[in-house]
Length: 479
Image (cartoon, rainbow, N blue to C red):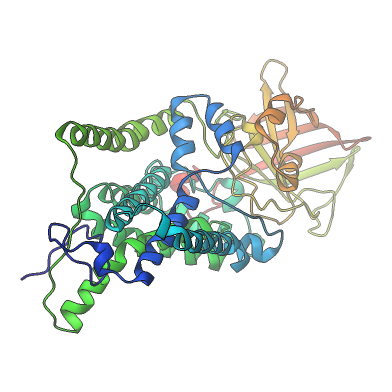
């Protein structure tokens, strides 16, 4: 009989569901113990156990964020405060704890099984696989739409393009490569969405699990190589995809390597017609909700509401670019160019949005966050995350009447992010940022910008900036 792909829930040696032999009669105690362990292990990783998660879910400010909380749930039993805990193998400590808890639970279940009603282990295994399938599908679809609308790894701004390669944190190097390849990122997003959709249907589970395992393994080992910090979550999808693939791989091994006849086994629970229609309606609803509806809502959130990693408030009109510091005066004293000077600026970068960056020979702390989107532009730190090289990032507002810029220090905002993320309630109570400087600006011509005003506690500056028109190879982007 030719090999057919099916959503086989039977472990090797299980009989068909429609035959007189039951799974409990055919399976060994070891197989039953394995099903118990897998069921408990899956529950730990699928069902949220943290009360804070339910609080955040109930406080969701819109239907999109409600769906996003469900799809993006990340179980974490323990945090290891070390380099290996953040980027290395210690990050998988929660897996070990979950495995031990599941083993203990399965052992207790085994000891008391003789006094319990005898369960249908085919049904337990079937619904365990259903939980795994839907958990992977929801998570990977949510992951995919971040790339379909390419905001997870945005195209690098002027300040990032002008950063020396050696001043990049490793993860930012990888993210910048993907960010420059916009259509590649979009393609990856659609592949992830497709991989999730395939898992909703029993006839395509094999293809969906295979695609998930391949794509997420690539993401996992890339995060290991570049210290991305998402290796545990991406590995979670790989692990669960492999669990789905094991029965298929065993049958393929028998068919192609051992040259044995293989009869695919499929278990599908039978329900009354009314309940079957209810389950079908629920499935259709979930599929439409987390594909069509979720995709449309994410587009709305990013491109209509402006919830992005990069600021969206327009900067000085037609001022985007890399500027050479032609003249720098401190307290009316001209400071000549000196790459070792810790006061005189070397370069200035202006983005399309309201960020001004100056480079100086002075160390600033490097943000290691991945630039999570925020509601306010000043809190959006992706542009400064993962880079060094003496760059100070300033968010500014424009008073075009008085020709002044009110500037705020984004590096300090990032420092707070590194020390710990505030809770939602704390963030709401946070005081408004205090301006760092208020500078006058002049624009004698399209390529010259003059800034003047206080600098530090007692000093003042006067800076003449001239835009470089041939700064980058990506001219189409920088013009």
